[in-house]
Image: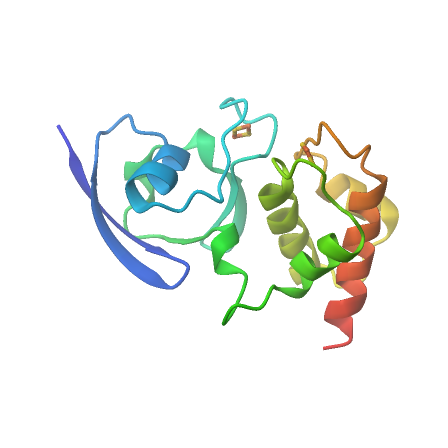
Amino acid sequence: MRQTVNVTINGRLYQEEAEPRLLLPHFLREVVGLTGTHIGCVIGECGACTILLDGKLVKSCLLFAVQVNGREITTIEGLATDGSLHPVQEAFVERYGFQCGYCTPGMVLATYSLLSENPDPSEEEIRRALAGNLCMCTGYIQIIESVKEAAKRLRQL
Ligand code: FES
Ligand code: FES
């Protein structure tokens, strides 16, 4: 039986219906219409489905939609403001931190989360923070460079 899910996503309150077994990334993409959250392995390994839930980084494929009732989510669509990319997004563009872009929403949100807690991470800390996000394309070098650039940009704000 469908249940009502009241959830705030990117600052907007949604009230939607969901089957109890509907996974959160499917809810975000197919019910709410926010397709920036990608779906990969669906077993918590790849990080393509990464979001922020109540400010904490989580892999949304490990949650059912009904579990976020009453909670607050930020997806990749929530980072840009007034049509301008977030500094983390700008850094990924400038430093070529993506190729196909499939992993990119998760990488950007993982970076955003890292830099919120640690504005000047070492390369080791960056690698550790992104360990749960896999990229099939870039070899990670450009992603690490993007994170360093993002940190620099945010420190200058
Ligand atoms: S789809 Fe969620 S971790 Fe891979
Ligand atoms: S850019 Fe293609 S998976 Fe990372």
